[in-house]
Length: 113
Length: 112
Image 1: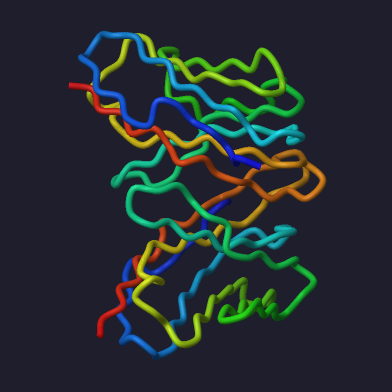
Image 2: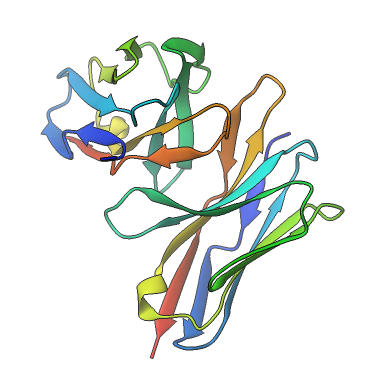
């Protein structure tokens, strides 16, 4: 298995622009998680899906952030408009709910200028 | 509340054992995890332990769990330079939460 795939690996954009991060979970996994990692706040759970349905979005910082999972093999995290404080590494993870173990993708390093 | 705490930094000599400690607060945690993050990479699952176990060994890794004190440790035997990374402890909250709570990570530096 290729593992969790994220794209792009690096994104540099200007403040105010829309940013879309993409994730393909491991085939057969039915839970998908979006995390954000910064030096100041560590690893934060933003939102997670179970069977393509958002279960807990309490970690989403504000309305500028939105996430979708249109099918079992694809999810997006969108930031619109982006701000410099959104600069971070964004990780996607997937898991099979029966084991509760999460497998992480390589992350997308976002820099907002 | 949900809180996982780890010391931020550990330095060991190559060949020695490393012990990374973690405390958690939720006694209902079912699984406890150790993840490793190398520079520029994602988190790699190292090992996990179920809450009804006291110890789990996997090659050079030994996980010890003290449920009474809510203390988890990861011992790496014969530490190598390739073990240099950040190690994250995480507790899994079930019961409707279904999410991992991560510690801040312990940066392990291995020197010759």
